[in-house]
Length: 269
Ligand SMILES: C[S@@+](CC[C@H](N)C(=O)[O-])C[C@H]1O[C@@H](n2cnc3c(N)ncnc32)[C@H](O)[C@@H]1O
Image (cartoon, rainbow, N blue to C red; front, side):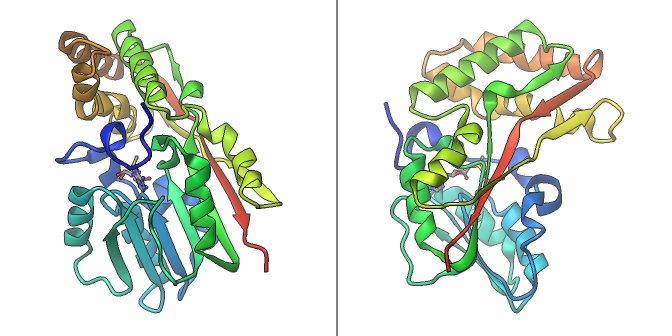
């Protein structure tokens, strides 16, 4: 099965989403900091609940503008509610493949979204159209195959994680997309492509270790029911993964390193 439309496996379940909500430019998209100056125009593709988008709006100020797009109606509604009347901040329900606008942006950003698309090259091709000459396209994404934990997490969580990657792969999503983005950027017509490591490392001594490392328990809570429904794990296996992983965090867990790359290029003048 492929999933080009943002429906099916790419769809975020409705409800509270702590993973998306605690993100800011500083803690989750710091590759953008070098671009974000007052007055900039920005398109944030796959904005989710708009936490990073709001953080972008703060940095570019009232003379700037940022439009967040996402096909998920629930997330866009939440994003609009939380935006209040922040000047220059707007959200629109739209799919990256179909989105169109006459506007051209100084910066088009797309974080942790191509990992959910079966046709990332097509998505990049469309996003490139919206970058002004001299503007930038900045992609941030994972290689889920290169995550590491010290020590290894419990078997039940490994089982969940492997099932999660298989479930994603069977839907046509590239688990290693971060390492394939440079090639894809060349395919869609960018010459010079910069790649920068944006690993997210959390260590036991960090004040937020128990929250940050809990990412995979949250994925098992939020996404896990979809895996159970699709027959990749049982409900008991899902619950055991959460329980044992929470115990790992509380006892022996030392660190977790999530592999993320920022892959960026400039639109020719
Ligand atoms: C992991 S979230 C990332 C949210 C945010 N960018 C961040 O980094 O926290 C992935 C987002 O991609 C969105 N998405 C899925 N399919 C999409 C599509 N076809 N076009 C645009 N966004 C899509 C999902 O609805 C979801 O909000």
